[in-house]
Image 1 (cartoon, rainbow, N blue to C red):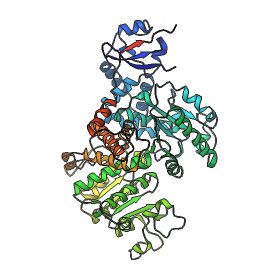
Image 2 (cartoon, helix red, strand yellow; image 1 turned 30 degrees about the vertical axis):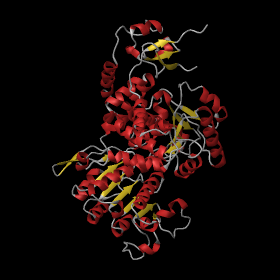
Image 3 (cartoon, one colour; image 1 turned 180 degrees about the vertical axis):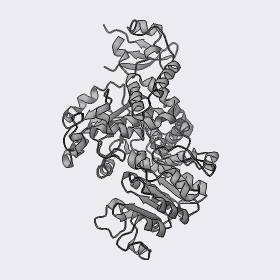
Image 4 (cartoon, rainbow, N blue to C red; image 1 turned 45 degrees about the vertical axis):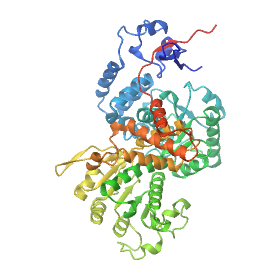
Length: 574
């Protein structure tokens, strides 16, 4: 039985929740618990008299009390534990607090602190949240999904924990990522928490630290691979389609070799996307678009070096390539402006066993034949930046310090206003810091990072660095896809989302060097992104046919505000 349903009083038009549980059970249900905010009437009608102290608080008073406790925690991991504890007691209050202090708390509920939480999740777990699907229970997937107490599931974020941020295989301890992403869907996009479900495919781990840890709570066996893995994912997807036919599925933190194949296999069978490929590509593209506005240049005027051709690197490079083609370049001309660099070095068309997906980003060997190299044995990153006269350098490598002073100095020699994006998460894995870019470029570099960095002073100026946070993209994409009723999420929808985000950066913000909007505007940004996605879905013949203003009205109406609804006890069945 679902614990509540949303109702509207036919006489007064008051919205209220009809509640099917009472007393202690009500207080232990995070979606329904109002703690000291239950009214006197609710306390009487719902069996709460004597279970609460006499004082009745507003959500504002509760928020003040919770923030006071948050400030008492002097360690970021302890702050994370406190906030997740609040999340597991009272979801409405948790999201009200998060909305009120979003800029301060975002690095706690997501990067970089969520990485530390994943590393220690089996040791800090207090309550379980979400669903774990394993080889031991996949046969019962319909029963598992039918027992989900949410009124209607419209959003699922799923991981298998194999590639958590830049930290690698963390098994089912990676559950903190889907939970954190849903925190952002609700806080930024406005989706109602009652329709959001985090899931982990607990298919084992190859991490010896976890396998040897007696406190590890996951499926403590080597990872499923090959056909066994594919069969489990297939059964999972079919279970989602049967039980949650209107849900959007977001693939999150899968290893590269699985992420691409899963996206291609299921993107036309179920409403879904991969945030690491498409979301990261889209938000980086937004920041690049703003950088071009600041420089008053076109993409076709640039020379791009992208280091790290995993999911994020591929998504970013694909968007750059698409934009170069839109600006009128031929396929060969677009290819000539992109220098993709990975573990083997610069990707060239004569490499043996070259991944077919990377072929359109491979430089022709003849193009680099006359380059001046430090060593004929290999083409180093510095060689590429120097010879390609790179104007834009993007790193998604999880290699801290990769963009050293020599590389940054070369970028400053190549162009007056170099663009340097060091996008690896968490902070400890970042290729360079914004301060290092400022020192190397005399404050002229345009910088973005994956994790948040504080503003700083350089040469008497306040310097800001954009955080290429996927939160600018995926909540709005998800909201727009659901409101538009599109059966699939296309690449064009992500491009529309990128343009919408960049358009939200004001002229004044661009003058300060900001490449993405102020985070405090994230709800409004999500509206613009969702509207752009819905319009693209409509114009592509996939979504609902309604005018732009009607889309915006529906999107704003769909955004949930964390407030307490009146409760009424459900009529007793006879």
